[in-house]
Length: 116
Length: 110
Image (cartoon, helix red, strand yellow):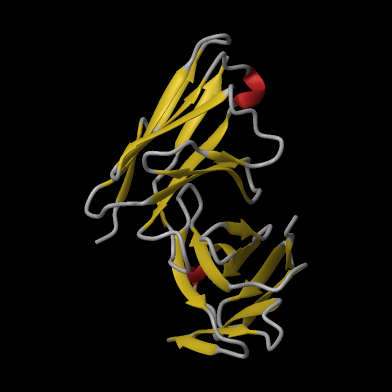
C-alpha cells in the first residue's frame, strides 16, 4: 500500500514555457503533500508543503509565483513551473503523508525536468 | 532554520565490511527518519525513530536515536552489493515537515 505516482516521469520543454507535474496518492488519502527538488548527487530540498484545500506553504527562497502548487483533492497535488528557464532543470519529487504529524512520507518516482 | 548534517558524504567498502552513517541536527527533533535511494530511483522509507535513546533493528541494519534527540546513526553489518545506494536521514518536526541530511553514498565492492 501507500503508493504515490507522478506524471510525467520525464519532460523536456523550451525556455519560457510552463510545465505541470502531477502527484497522486493511489491507495490512500493524503492530507499533506510535499514537493522537493533534487540536484544530481545532492540531497532533497523541500520546496513547499501542500495541504488539501488550503494554500501551500513555501520554503524560504522558493518563489511561489514561479512554482504554483494546487492541492485540489486528498489524492492529487500539482506543481506548475511557470516560465521555465534552464536553471529550473532538476529532479522534482513529491511525497505524501497520511497525516501531517510523525508519519513517514511516501515518495513518488520523481519527474526529470529539462529546460532547453 | 533547522539544519541536518550527515557524514560521511561517500563510503566505499568491500562486501562483508560494516558501514555506518551519522546524522546531527542543529535542533532537537520530534523524530528522525531514514530513507534509501537507489541510483536513478526515489527515496524509500526505511524506519522512523521517535523516542530518546531508541534503537531499532532491521536484519543487518541498526538504527539509533540519541538521548538528546539531536543525532542518529545507521549501521549496516556485513554489507552486501544490494546495499548500494544513498542513505538519507531526515529530521522531522511535530507538524510533519522533514529536513533531509546531505546523504551518504554507499558503494560496495564485491
